[in-house]
View (cartoon, rainbow, N blue to C red):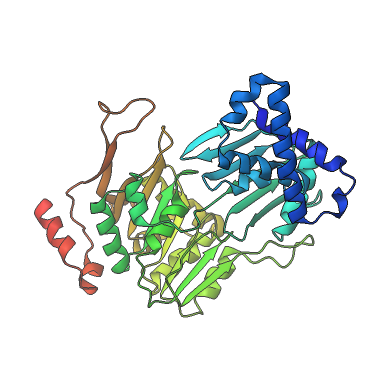
Length: 432
């Protein structure tokens, strides 16, 4: 039962294409023809090769449907890519050349047995796929970032830049959107921490979500955004639109644009943040801050746009502070470091740090208040919640633990008071 799927897809595909009427078939006629040939093929193989009987007798209705789709996509559609895209349980697709395919399911990577027919077929499918997504990929423009209609993020790199053949990476997002309740169900968050986060958002604290690659920053931001009151005007700014904010009627979504082959026409994150300030936003949500636009984001947070939220790549919450300093300096190298730190301290209220654990699960590691600047000019964090791992119950393959309240009270509670949120403050005093 090793690779019957790919074998049967190839055999049925050959038979269908040998049909002289194949070129004139409609899509519906082609599917009907494939289905009939699939049944004939199964019956024939059972007679000729009894060793496969157990395989075919155990095929479920869904597996037969997948086999049908596999043949159809190999003829008319996206080949193996079309079949993979139909599988809603897959959250990430990584194709490293035509014969090396990995996917992520439930936080775990697995290598697929299937492969594309050839390098040529794979390249042709990539070209068609990118063109359909509105961002053609060519030898002169071999790296493309785009998105699909469902919000999935796509990165394509052609050879010879990719040494072992074209590389396609697709990050998918759930159609129904992410919620805090789901994060609690997945064990990424506790109910107590979720209540606190809701109050932070309602009280308009400026929040940064930090984490490494694949830690779930965008997913967490999508869930957190559900706490934004629907009556507010919100501007979202992203490199590739991934946010799924659906409950806010007065929502403006902005996306960057790459320059053309002549190097003109590009619209950067900095351009969009500056433009957004003239749109009367109540909150600005930036998908991810990566460079010089960090300064513009901090200035927006400092100029009356409380409740803004963004994400950044960092290995710890403390590292997020250093990363912000570096990003600001990349765009404004003449600024004194102390002025930059003062800007960060004045703008960012809370840093939430996420991590992808050794067992593949994603956890909220800490919720920190940006509390003060010490005598040496370093920004200090006040942990309100911190993840505690139970090493006795866990193992090298399984992480056991939860996000625990530290007992530290919030040092800057003015926004809670200003927005009439007192219950957490009283809790903090009693726990402190």
